[in-house]
Length: 625
Image 1: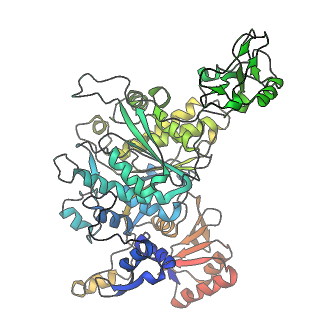
Image 2 (image 1 turned 45 degrees about the vertical axis):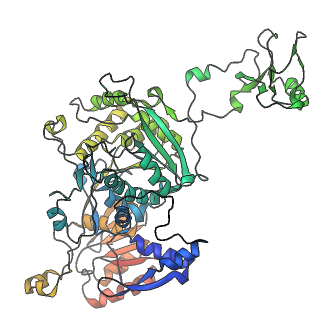
């Protein structure tokens, strides 16, 4: 019976396998640190396969380099031995919600999400540290073996956080920031659907570098726009040089040929340009210029108006259509000469025949996307204590969601969640149009300053603020829309999952460190502080099962069984499993079944289990942990 691997995917192995399919002649063998043979790639041969003229050595090439880039790539590919543990008491509607709030390091979270959510996220929005010289950035290091060593080296605190302040005096100021962003963006790209899109807020400090690494990660051809967002209404008179009233939102598609932007609704003023003074049965219309800049002899002719006036194209221009087509439009009542029939000819553009919205542009003013001041007012409505200094306005995220062209059931991810504006915006959007979009928020439990209003109000971490905002915002949205049909079904809940060490004991040790007592401890390899539900979520992560599926507990032959989804998975972690129980469970014909390896009453039942499932449920996969 196969064991379920608790580690996240090893992307190096996966990449070698993909290259082996394309270039089998480039596959070789090398020895690892322990002297064992392993598959490897002969890079000299691979370069020969990919290059007419080999690029090697010190030959100049176009690319972004920084100290630590190779380590950042290594950090993206290296598997981790972590899990997600449910926190029911901090969740809202744990058993029914489709939303997730993951508390922990976002690099680890992105790795833990790979199996279940690869290619399933429609939109990502992130607001990462801007690297102003005062921000904290993640200092990732997965080359050391134990967490204690990381703590001793000063890279993590006692809570396991990898945040360090990136001061401008740091000789690797830009490099450290790039090394933080690069692996996270690589993993984030894996999660996007083919028609998915990512929005990244940033300012002038790193926008140039961010653009370069996004070109590398997503492909330069998938660049969509560098949007300028008006973050302030007016200039700051105390600015040292020039007042900064804008930030940027970089937009990249997973595949530019698969994604198309959503149109924005027309404003009242834009709609007021359409009218129907001649009661045309095709509805409201607006007059559009009939001439074009490009001169064409075939489109240079005289037009005679209803009153006999003769109209020529403006100087150096031509009519938009030739004379034959013009007569067809005139006969179809698509040409107007003004209210009195004495004005220049214009083309009637009917609202029903034009795009059902406005094409987005790269200037997001505060009227349509909010600004920092509006964002603070929003937070103050929810938290009178004024506990978060730099929130983004929900209007900004809502505008991004509309351009992302979301369907009603899409998933939106934010792995620098902060005050959880993205979750707020998703719930608001669902309330507006009856959608069932789902959010996944990821936030490190970064400590709040002990002198801050947040700390005084009882919020010890940023994650606590984010979770409480979702709770309060959800209730507020429901109350404000209580008259709307179906609002009672709005999902304002979320499952809190916390990143933790593996559910399994570290059984790797040197021979001289093993004692008789420790030898007995390794018989049961599951940690004593882990509940059955902890084990279940570890299985969901490892097996790539949706982390928001409905979970129900049932008694079967006297044993507690977790059933996940409709028939996605069944898990039993109780002891003394016998043949009667195995047969009863097999008859449920679920897709996957998992047991503890030590749960079987004896070895013969463990061996017979696979045969029982092959007979009664041949399509069921059976695993042990």
